[in-house]
Image (cartoon, rainbow, N blue to C red; front, top):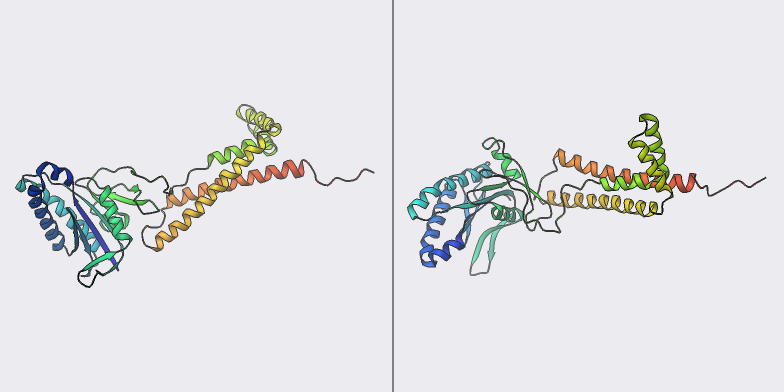
Length: 324
């Protein structure tokens, strides 16, 4: 079922408890949850659960409304606006971080025969929770599909690419009332959506291809004269006779092949991610970057192949005509 999930968490709760004590903190958290719940419910939310000082709310479940993403943002902004007055009344500085995501999830009752919990399970729930974790105090961090529904009300908000725990692909998000941040807390094993430019493979292939490099350099010399082209020509001639030529060609082949394998792996992961509705299609800029990386890798492999062809087949024929 399609829905929008909101996680609203009271910032600095641990510090508050340590300073005020559990007894004094209890009524503050209770009043915050009451205000948060009533505000969200007034815009059509269903309060799924309370998690300590945080509230999880669902929009479009069980009551249907076409503008559930926009309603979630408006309700969250209203909650943020109410906090200064609530802070003054309770004499405690209160700030809340909010994460919002839209997508599909399974909704129903879970639990034993004695206690059942009506809740939602799906990537959209996890995404909203992860967005809330990366939102700062007073910030509302929303997923890309949520921002599309409210872009006219929040024009010009820059997109951010974030790594969310448990999600193989980076997530595009927008801070509706905060400064944009770079992707933080990225796990080392996470794949990059933006492929690395394969300039190293191209360079190694050009320098390592002795015969082919000599021919290219010679054409440059004829067209533009000496200078840098002449230096490339001399370098290519040196590599043609250097023992480093074969290792360089091998390295170029490994790098280019690794790039192509990595791009194919990322393509499959993104396809699966889109099928689960956890991420969106690539932007035109991302597609250009992928095609550029793949093209450079293919060029590198082609140069290596031509080098082998020219040096070992054309330059050193395997079959010679018998002498008469």
